[in-house]
Image 1 (cartoon, helix red, strand yellow):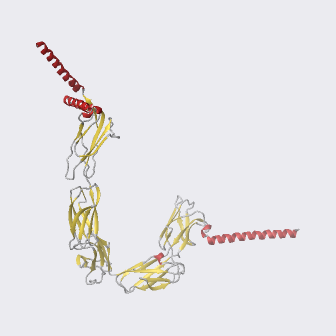
Image 2 (cartoon, rainbow, N blue to C red):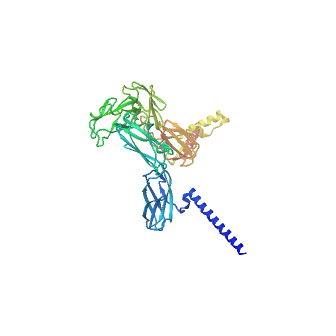
Image 3 (cartoon, rainbow, N blue to C red):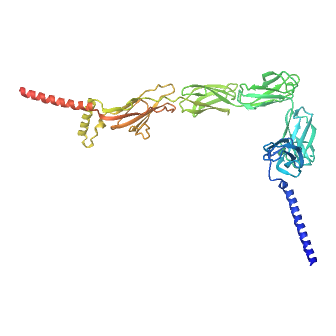
Length: 547
């Protein structure tokens, strides 16, 4: 029985050891596959999260409960004692140390315990190359250095203008350097590229080496009048008498180089034809003509409008530059053909036109030449809208009589009776043979840009909003309008429209009432016939008595 107990105890011990070994192996495998998994769950903020060797990185962490921490790059200590602020905030800035490409772990550890990770984060190193110097004459030593390559990366090749010049290998930190003599090449910019067994040319980009002396211009194209910045490098220290030419004509001179042999200036492109023109640079006897490579500048056609805003009938001048010599040019205002012009030997022309009838807003003035050169500019028709007209008759709250006099009433009555007898089956209303109501408003002055028209609205009742007008008349050319309306209450308003469709505000709404006849006129209309009848009877009776 004791022997059996010992066997069971050994089996349990073996089982425990097996489980412990399995756990250790699992932890080690997990650490190999996921090295960050054993770090503290808390993370630090890293900005930026990737960069090159030598670039600056800032790490931040909040909520720390200690006074000092140590900063680690992988297993390499960067700073042994970094102070934490009283509020528990940490901010630390450093330069990426020489290290191979790939992911690297940043760690914050509490002082006094090498294994007490507080927080961690990951920074990715990318490859980078540099050149020194980046300009000079041919046949001088040039050094190319690389960092952030793979550790011990082999067969790193350096190319000058796509031609292999040398090769090298990286050290265990992914760094390397080579020095070679710059080839005896033409003046100007030349390109150095690098490719390794792991690192591609696209990852590191292209370096430039400038063989001097050299002049560069910016921009390299534009219309006449463009300001071009020119920078020269590689001239003799303090060299004077530096001159700039445009198509072999001097346009600027007496430029002096600085202590490092460089200089900057600005030129304005003179009147010239479309296409490429040569900007030349030369100095004193140290840098004579033919040493500095020429610069090609492309002149593009353009037009300028003077003025750029106006109204119909205004005179506008078009100044064109950058066209071909003696080029025939068609000019258009929108879809309206304005005429033709011919460019001078310098590619310039002028054309004057009057703004045609058009709508307000922006319009394109376009020119096109028979040599294929085109240009356009914007002209804005900007015109103040007319003032609002003022109602003259009827005015606000005015009463309008259809029969304003006895004569109108009697003549309308006679016309009514005549019409009733002649067309007895179509007896009209008395108001249909009455005179209409003539609405009138103030006239507005007409300028030289065209005529004005008017829009009239009449609404039912005394509705000042005129949401539902019963009469709408547009394109009225006179300041009056006659309408036939039945008796009732009405509101009217009017606005002016100029020749480019600018509208004035509406006039103030005027309310009026239409009545058939006033009591006074009606009384007179009845009194006169009765008086005539009475007088006639009296005369008849008087004559009868006399006889």
